[in-house]
Amino acid sequence: MVDLRYRRFCGFTICLSSLVLWIGSLILLTGFLSGCQLVRNIFDIPAETEIAPIDQVSPMLSAQLCYQTAEGYLEKKEFNKAIDWFEETIHRDPTTNTKVLPKLAKLYAESNQPKKSIAIYEQLLRQRANDADWNKEAGEEYFKLKDYAHALSCFQRAAISIGNDLTVKERIAICQFHGHQIKECFKTFQSYLTEAESYFNLGLLYWKAVTLPDYQICAEDCFAKAIVSDPELKVAQEAMEQLKKSIPVKKESEMKVSKTENMD
Picture 1 (tube, rainbow, N blue to C red):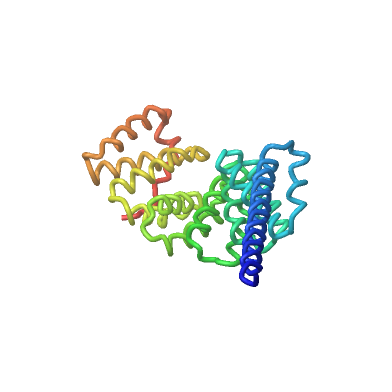
Picture 2 (picture 1 turned 135 degrees about the vertical axis):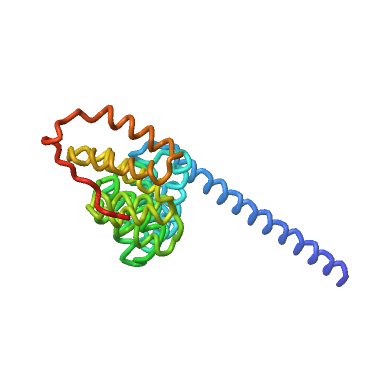
């Protein structure tokens, strides 16, 4: 009799355990489906109600959902929506700054909003002043605005860590040129080019800087030095020919020749 009761008790316990496991699995499945629906809602519902599902969860989780949404728009190359959602991420959880701000700065840069991008990079550089990537990217944004003094400072700090980055060196040389640091510009070119190539590149900068007529004379002088240094440098010869065709013939007395500084 006792043995029968024991067997019945064991059977009842097993059935009850199975029922509990089944109910638990059902709850987990319901939660998973609800989560999937929430994500679908975030991406698919109209813009004016997008924020509603996220408000139904905790602030930390809502910030994570905002971040994931922004990443989704970023993959779709919908930059404006990605910007909005990254900003919302920071608003909901300021501790995400370190992860989100660099992405926001790049997005503003890609969206042709250099001033907003610079503002974020300045904030980041106050935390890590010598970060090579941030300095380089900030320099590019200053360069877009033709703020060559600030761009030069950023590129020079980047060069300390990056080392032999030819893009950074070229940017430094161009900024030095626009800052009327001609000798420094030429030395920067010489750090990664031959003497002839350095004269040629300096000549191109003078040629493009059409704000002063004498700059074309300086360009001709640089191209001539490049040809003397390397007679086989065909690009210098071609540039010299094109330059001569573009310069009006002047009387010797009317020419105010401003030769390049002595850099030999």
